[in-house]
Image (cartoon, rainbow, N blue to C red; front, side, top):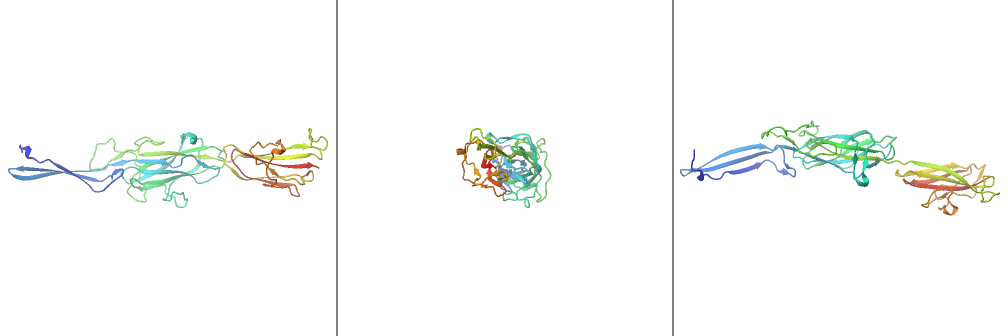
Length: 360
């Protein structure tokens, strides 16, 4: 209609937003109104026309699951409520609920000297959301899903399980924490899982459409509305054994030249406690024994604990048996009973004690 377009003013675009932006972007559902204003003059008369275009910001679904533990968490046979700890962060632009699942995994987790391979499963496996103090409390941390997690916020989540009593040393149980996005909007109510997005649908500017922007986790694919991270328990137990042996040191006939176990012979009894390599330390390790006083004379003899770093062997030379006499041993009483307290025996170590007696 108007042929003198050079008299038309340049249109101005104004963008307005109802809420502020988070680090992860403008909140979904935010209405964006843009108005174009046209000013023009006809026969000296200035007029204007406007056109407003409105759309809503879509829901970008994204989340991160991070394993807090730097290496496999040690656990003991029969132990209950052992923990794996994770952080779940909402990296999207919408308040969301999140479903939580603990998945058994047949995989490798961690790297270098901390790397472990799955070969075992625990029992009574559960998932709970921390109440905010970062410490698992069975009486308080009872929620099993993340409720109304705002953008840029995170929650601590625990996988909790029990260890079977027959778990063997160095068994490894690897688990993935899988987090799936769910509908938010109603506090204290678990929203339905969002299992698909609108990636294959045309843009609808009046509707909040869902776009899965999540990456691939340890047990899920890219852009599937899920994310996961792996962690592991490693069973550590003490495999402790004791062996008792004896040698004859001398006798009244042969002296120290091939002595025999005849009356008057001196016998050395040896008690050797071994904790297997890689095991947990064993505390309160006490050996008791009775040397029959009707047969064996222990008068004036004391328990000698070996305190060196050499080999515990019943054939150890007398000069190599060190340690304060009776420091950790109860000398035989009138009934010939002795008590040897080895206290704590570390994994991969051997400790021993000795006492001499004469055959009556």
